Length: 509
Picture 1: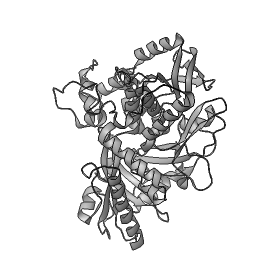
Picture 2: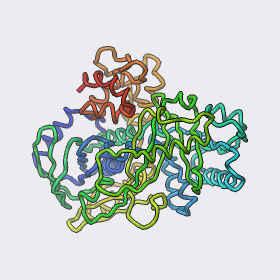
Picture 3: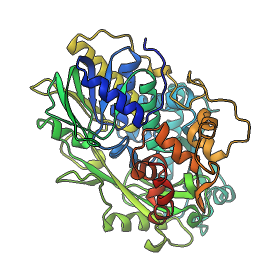
Picture 4: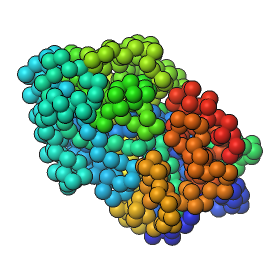
């Protein structure tokens, strides 16, 4: 069992750990990639007592992990396609996150399917059957209705209360079901990385891995240009859509998922995710989801994305039109491109096979290159813990590592009430937004702040405190303005908000 240490990630810790690695020696495991899969592997391995180094070329959650729908899916979609294994695992992993490891980051999100004239009886029966099957998955996973309420039908009045801009002409009530929703996907990655550090893992961002072999990696510090060769008993490639750049034998078929960002007021400040069936498609929906910072995210698409992998994917005009046209089928007043405040796209690292990308398996695979690099590809955010357990089990078996059993099913992340490093008791009432983002650690954000005006917002109309910017640098590993705005707070999803908050972020780096 690993000792519990300080979870803070910052420049001082980074420099000290780089210096210690430069003195030589062999570590047990090097993980390349700082997304949800890589940080999950680092946490699993470190909590078993292994000496772990994670190297990320950019920042935590720089790639696909920050471009999701912020949903912790219960697997209903996979049940409908006949993949019972993924469906059941997804429901189990959702329950683990909501009840044990990250109850502060995952909440029950109501999903409202309006019953409009365009939805015929067969489609209504299919949705209702699907929701009942979702209730069954929840029960099978051991998640009580007190955590995720049962699905039900609601009247037109309640539907309008939950989603005020829903089309009212012919509205015959709605089906209401619940799934898990993250306060933010990048915040989950940061929490996992900090918990890994709490158990002894060395977390290095701005560290480029090259010359990757099964027993060594050359790391270059992007801040200083200094390089070192790090020897390791096992090396895991967890770089997602970039996995083929580390191991050229890997063949992926990325698909692009695009979301649009709106002010919540454009949807009447909803409290439920408006869930609209895609015309002509079976078991596919567009979601308009209420999110933090007074926003609604509308998504998502599923399009082939061949060619070179960009650092930051871009939505296409056709995807923007598709999302607007689909959501407008369920709205009283049509939204236009002028209502869109921002947009983002992410690439799913799907394992190559024939067929439409929407039908490709979301399962993961663990492979080994001719030179001994272990790679994990595919998978989905909800199952990150399960994937990490599988990868570490295989690394232990293939390399003969000495390690304890997996502990992550019951290991609370930083910010969870049961995490062993408790925050000081709050002497003042915590803002709801602060508690939503930091959980039991919220009081610590203010307690350790040394900046001027810590409880002041970073800009008018942006519900983020100056103390949060400072905490991103002193405890969450942010090294740049971009790290603060684009990944620790997500202010950067709206260009106008980014511009107003940029000067405040610059103060802290």
